[in-house]
Image (cartoon, rainbow, N blue to C red; front, side, top):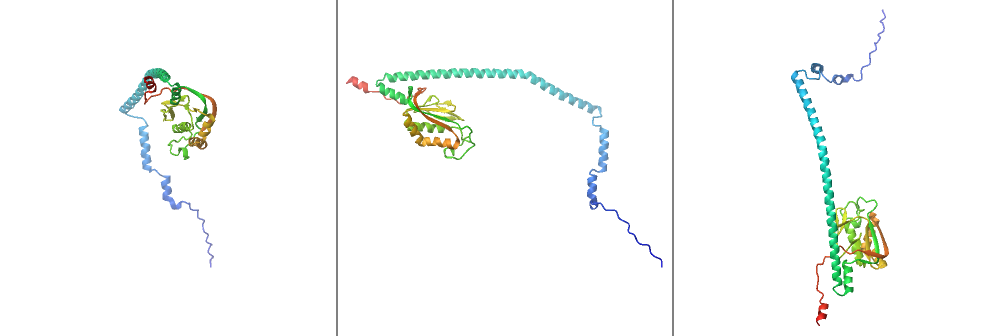
Length: 300
């Protein structure tokens, strides 16, 4: 019986891992159809990137010339207009300087007239009889200069203003910069000094009267419509030691201390032996009564 040769299995080549994804592989390898690729190549070879006809070339040349003309005209106009703009700017600056100088002269004239009115008021007070009473009225009304012992209070903004806070003194202020001294802070300081026994008060050399107003214009503090800049130096004539202690113990003094503790506002108070306060620029008389005492004595 013949022996059958052994059956030997031929080794098979390993299949590709992506053999089951042949369709996706073909799409990835040939993303553009061959027909489209050939058409794009023919169009590129025929166009060459530049216009071929004479009309197209003329149109391109006209467009380039027009663009160059626009750029050139714009540059020339800018160069010609530059001296005109500079001249107008200089003229505007000169006008501003002239108007500022005129405003300063008018302000000086107003100050001179106010001083003249104040001097006439003082003369009228002296000639009305009862010089002691007239002098007291002049001091209390701010119509005359005063000097004497008192306290010096300096209030200044914080070194680094805070970004807001809900502490008591400013929880409803509406200002984000709580480290700035505000007009209502100075109002409380002045009212506290009056209540503590001050006889005359000035802020940065501006004498306060019963009719003085402390207001705000933006971030500036105005006293009788005159802007002040920090630090704010408040001078108060009175019994120095008593005035200082009474003010610091008052509600307004505690309010100022709270601003210092919570918001970093800087304050310094000292007792002074001799303070000199100027007279108020002008004192407006709203009501007046005739002094009939001298007349009655003369007719009796």
